[in-house]
Amino acid sequence: MINRPLRPAGPRNLPVLRVFASVRDRRKGFLIAGSAVFPCALGRGGIRTDKREGDGGTPRFDLPLRSVLYRADRLARPRSLLPLRRIGPRDAWCDDMKDRRYNRLIDRPPGEAEERLKREDHLYDVIVELGWNDRPVIRGRGSAIFWHLARPGFTPTAGCVAVEGHVFAKVLPRLARHCRVLVR
Image (cartoon, rainbow, N blue to C red; front, side):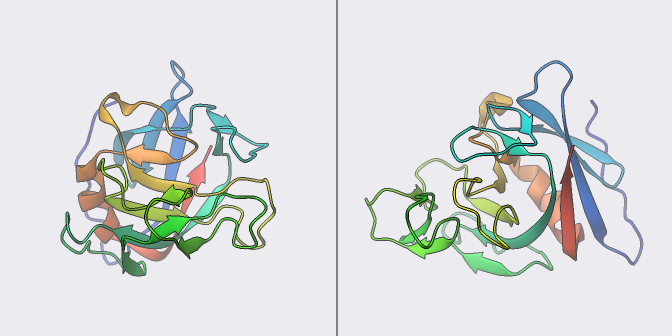
């Protein structure tokens, strides 16, 4: 697919992003924002309708965008209508099914196990929290489904959608406050 420039949509912001898998490799796909198409990485298990914790699948679902978390020590504050929050050194995402805080942003001292948000690599320099299994939370149905930065070569994620950094710069300012990602 070709990276086409994102055209202004007029006074309205984008209410929907679409994600679909490549026919060649189910672990890679495309994110469509208006008329622009961008390559993305998907979960190592491809897109799944029966998402479970640890299966590596990206859920086939209509996912609301909840908030943007970013590394203020690495990036300028992103332009977005979504709620913004700086990632701190103690921020983690609970993926322990036995913990009452399962699938929530939590405060953890550095070094303790969890999905640590302040990473040495750049994958979580900017994260959009996707509303998966959060209203209500069902233990074991999967946690920490994010839209984040991709590794070189778009290698698979643990279940998230990942894109190159320039995509966030182009797309985040254009998203409606109640934007959704349709994963098909």
